[in-house]
Image 1 (cartoon, rainbow, N blue to C red):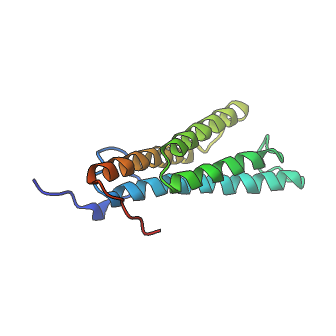
Image 2: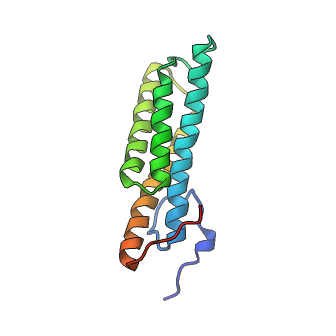
Image 3: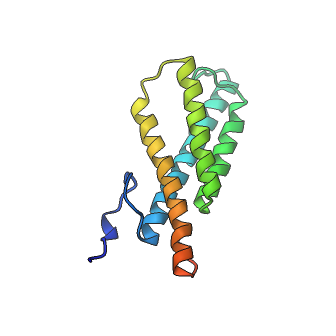
Length: 143
């Protein structure tokens, strides 16, 4: 049976088994990137709210705590933490649910895209540890 070519891997891959370390790393990094983007956007909106510019309804200085959580979880996913990947998805879903309950949003497509990134982050971190365990050696990452 022919080995799957990993050169056509992309971060939108949502199904199928992750067979190579490169695929696992790429998927995990997409989850980390989503967390870092959430952290950056949240931090900008929180700072703007602190200075009187309401970019998003309901944001204030306390949103900096959310930004810090996303940044920390992103770092954890970047380091292949399965727990951080799961918590990042949970935090994102909780925040989205809260935002949608307060104001209807036209950002449903972006929300679904970020959910896919976070789910792929979970898939990548789980596959990374599975592949590492199966190979009996450390999977190297060129970061």
